[in-house]
Length: 102
Image 1 (cartoon, helix red, strand yellow):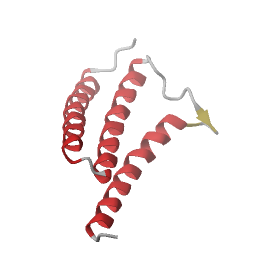
Image 2 (tube, helix red, strand yellow):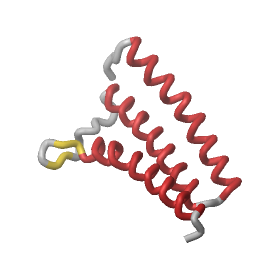
Image 3 (cartoon, helix red, strand yellow):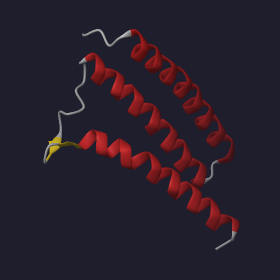
Image 4 (cartoon, one colour):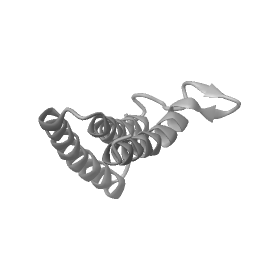
C-alpha cells in the first residue's frame, strides 16, 4: 500500500462516510416506497458510493481500476462515469411518466 496524502485521504474518508449514509438512507427509503423510480435512484446512489470505494482502493494500489481496458480506456471508470447519471436519468423519467399516468 502506498501513502495517498492527508488531504486526499481525508476527502476519501468524507466521501465514503457520507456516501455510506446516503446509500443506507436510499435503501431505507426504497424499502418504504417499493417504486421502480426510487429503485433506480437507489441503484445510482449505491453505484456512486461503489465508485468512490473503488477509487479509494485504486489509490491505495489494492485494486487498480485500469485492470480492464479497451483501447487504453479503463472500462471500470467508464462504467461508473456513465452508470450513475444514466440510472438517475432513468429514475427521473420513470417518475415523470408515472406522474402523467401513462
